[in-house]
Image (cartoon, rainbow, N blue to C red; front, side, top):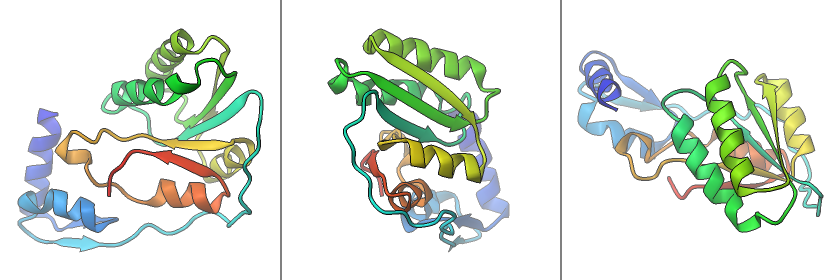
Length: 175
């Protein structure tokens, strides 16, 4: 992402980076001419008991900001994640900004080509909507592009939110 690299370098020359985890700070260190501060994300949801049920359809959830930068990566990662269960009825609830229509349509089309019995639900993001979707799902998907330098470390907020919501998370192997 050439623009992001230029923007990141410019910010690092004039600002202190505030990041939510050590791994992300390490990834930005070469551009952080004015230093790095680590401030972890707060836990925003209430802790719930673990629930692992056998549901039909299998209910998956993804939540976050969907846009042009991560749309294709997310589409590829979700298709790879659901491929092993292609014979299972599946419902994916995406809690995000509903105006990301082009990316949502592409993801829905791709997953319908992988899973015959597939439903995509889109829920407008809010803290309450995220908590409600956690209560409805069986697993939370947290994919990340592990091959690009700018995404090798991320905030732990989605993983912690899934765990505190009593759900298992299927996440990419990043710090």
